[in-house]
Each structure stands twice: as C-alpha cells, then as structure tokens.
Image (cartoon, rainbow, N blue to C red; front, side, top):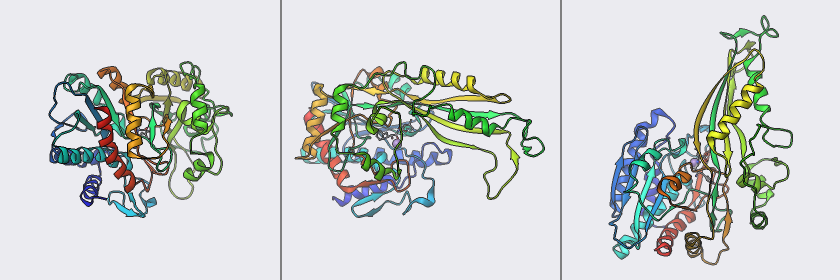
Length: 443
Ligand code: BES
Ligand code: MN
C-alpha cells in the first residue's frame, strides 16, 4: 500500500466528525476544511459551502464540453462511538491489525470516499486530466438524514448538472466479491414520549391506580409486530412492490448464507418475517425497529418508582413505493389507537429518506459492472439490493433527474455504526483502482 495514501486516510479519520453531537460541530467543520485542502492538493477546484447544519464540500476538475459529467457523492460525517469501552483500540486513532484498519468512519464512509479522491489524484498526476467532467459532493449530514442537502441541490441545480452519480457507501456481499447494488431501503424516524402523572410517584403508594408510562411504551412497541414478524400497522404494506422472481432466484445463489449471517451478527438464531429468506427480509421488505427505549430508574440497584414518562426511538425501513410521510402517518394513527388508558402520547416525526431502485441492466449500470470487474479481476460479480439507506439518493433522481450507481466496498463484518468498525487495506486499494476503472468505463 502507498504509505502516503494510508497517511491521508488516517489524517481524515482522526477528525471526530460526529454529525449528531452538537459538541462536535467544530470537529465536523475542521474535517470539511481538511477535505477541501486534500481535494485541492489532488488538482481539483474545491470549496466548502456552509449550510444551516454542517457544511458541504464540493470539488470539480475543469469541465470540457462534450465529455460526460459524473458526480461522486459521499459523506465525511460519522456515527457516535459509544459504547466506547467495547472498542479494542480508540475509535479516532486508526490502528492496523492483520491488514485491517480499525476506526470509526474507516468504512462508513471515509475510507470509501477517500479512495475515490486519491484515485482521481493518481489519474491526474499520471495523465494530466480525467476522462470525464467530475464533481465531488461530500456532505457532513448523511448520518442524520441529509437535512440541508435537498435545498442545496435545488439552489445549485445548474452547477450540479451531471449525467449520473456514483457512490461507494454500500456493501460487498463477501470478501473479494465485486458487488453492484441496484436498490436501497428508505427510512422514516420517529420519537415517542408516553406520559401520565405530573411527577415520578412512589410505586407502592400509587402503583395499581395510575397507569405506568413505561408499561405503555412496552405495549405500544409490542403492538408493532405480530408473532410472525409482520409489521402490524394498518396499511403498512399497501405500497410495497413485490420481489421479482429473478431477484429471489439470483439472491439464493449468492455467497452469503444464514450461517455467515449468524457468524457475523453473533445471533444464535435468526428471526424475521415469515415467508422470506434473510436477504429478502433485509433488502426487499420493510421493517419497524426500536433504536432506543428508556424510562424510569437506570442506576445500580432498585428504586420503587412509577416514572412519569417513558420514551422510544423508532425507525422504519422502507421499500419501493413506500414514502416516509405515508408511513409516519400510518404509524402515528396506530400508536394513538393502541395507546393504553391513562397515558398521553407526544409523537415527533424525525428524518426521512425515500427508498431507491435502479435498473442494473441500464447502459450505466453495465458500465459500472465492467468497472467492478476490472477492479477485481477474475472474481464473480454479485447483484444485490441493500438494507441500509442513503437518504439523498432518491432526491438526486427527483431534483437532478439522474440515476445513481452504488459500488460499495464495505464487508459484512465491517461493523459500521458499532464498536471496532473496520476497513481492510485491500478494500481501500481496490477502491482506488475502482475509481480509475469507473471513470474510464463511464467516459
Ligand atoms: N453507508 C450507510 C448506508 C448503507 C450501509 C447502505 C450498508 C447499504 C449497506 C450510510 O452511511 C448509513 O448508515 N445511513 C443511515 C442513514 C440514516 C441515519 C438516515 C442508515 O442507513 O441508517
Ligand atoms: Mn452510516
């Protein structure tokens, strides 16, 4: 591995650019400024655009009429690191063990987006220019729903005009298996507060006569699914596009089994919606998930309290043609209908992103697959959808009118969003090769 490239990635990772934490605002900004300087150093004109949230970094080469214009999108923000004590080495001090870089952001998304930046730099250094007109758009709010990016796209439609978009922020089905993703799930977030009495109460003096908000939250959460793992919200599946036969057939032959899934997750037994395989459940079916749930006494030991409030953070993963607004509305109605007596609810809608699907056999899709084949010579290609979300992708289609190619480099055991997130150096190198191959194929 080129040591200078590795040093660049380590410098990028050392910024604790956690977008959701207000205390990290300056770290996020410093990271954006570093990225702008790196993009300039590889030979691009680069800028940092402030937004009402975190800044957007843009860069471009000199555009020549008649060439294709390609946008490469990525994000420099990362997820929080907690639980910190479950990390083997410090999250913002990149550490290499057995050829694998361990750090928050190593896979999601600093390693993957920097591979494109460095690939572009290598090509410019060797050939003097790129074969396409290029735009880098690298944002700092992907992990919190890309709140300010849509307005930026609207306001800069002309400057961002392109023929297509490429992203490396998705997964590879297995090591050394080039993977083209033709779909993403969407997402809709919601936070619910259940409250009743005006203060915490003695659970002996009042328990039994006053409804407990923590019990109410538990009942509401339990009401979201039936015993077969179907989501029990009325109308939830109304707009779900069924899986196609060719997908089911192709996915059944992928080199990732339920044994692999158990190994990678540590779950002894798998569970999910009846009638679907694990990959179908993750890639093509919508879900309801609890991301956090709390209320009452959390300290050591026992405290006999009837808490005055309790909370749950929910997200729903969506598939074509569900929309965040539709689902949040249906869930709200469901929660209000199932709210136990004596409890009031405060329901706050959170961020949302639409699902995405593109044709893997389009002209650009085929070019992307040729590029993957070049970057991983002799390896069989996998065509998949993804369970994760990149909220802006469907907005790109709506506002800029272009399709997005998803060429991911994250491995199933990359531990994105979790302790010991990691990225193999071999994937970083593959990403740099992939950038070159991709721009050549798209040109
Ligand atoms: N890179 C991921 C999305 C992803 C991961 C797609 C793996 C496919 C496979 C992205 O950074 C991410 O985590 N997005 C969030 C978005 C949300 C917070 C709005 C997600 O999916 O939870
Ligand atoms: Mn992520």
